[in-house]
Image 1: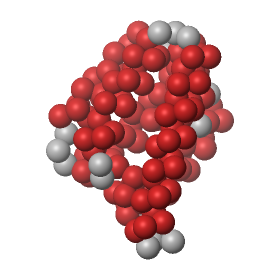
Image 2: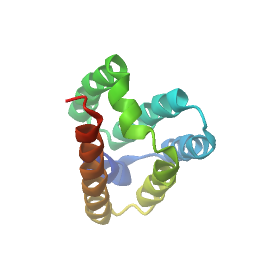
Image 3: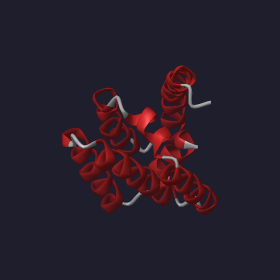
Length: 129
């Protein structure tokens, strides 16, 4: 879902939406409180999806964000390595600024695949499931 949101944002995001994404990325770079980092991560994702103009994806994200809010332990595991994740927000903004959806899709699919594999490993080792 993330790679399609970023690819869609490459095509449809306004300069104002890109500026807001950059503002959120800059805040994430400075954030030290995990709960705020998690909340802003959801905000960044929501804005990226909205900038993509993909209403079905936004509706799906609404459900995903509810799950995230009701199961904060999952989000805590996913985002606890804030230092590793911080640069990804600005990188996403830079990819969107390039306005090349095919490259964005390929780059983010590769990166998200690695990130998802790492997260699955973390979850399996956590004993949550």
